[in-house]
Image (cartoon, rainbow, N blue to C red; front, side, top):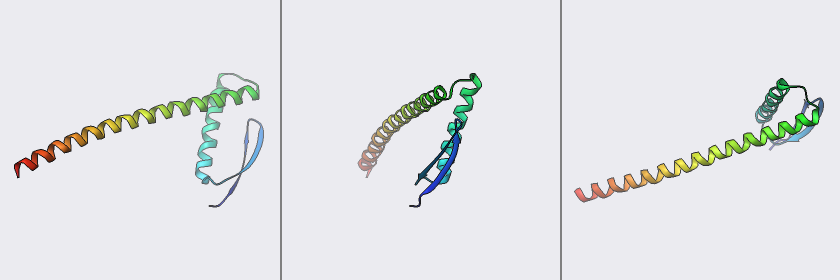
Length: 99
């Protein structure tokens, strides 16, 4: 796995780090953060450290929201799978009785 050096500017600071993530994933993350930053800046001008905290809270909220949605979806899929297994079991026992 190759290591990419990533340099970007955020909140008036320049950052450089190394990552094993694909370049597309890094770009997507940086674009996501930039979009969140623009949303907050549109509300009012705030000091950089407060903006960083707000961004952190926004990202954490988005994570929790997506995690809950994922858990709900998984529970729904498990319930549907149980129903499907029950249905197939009934079909199997019905067709076995006919033979």
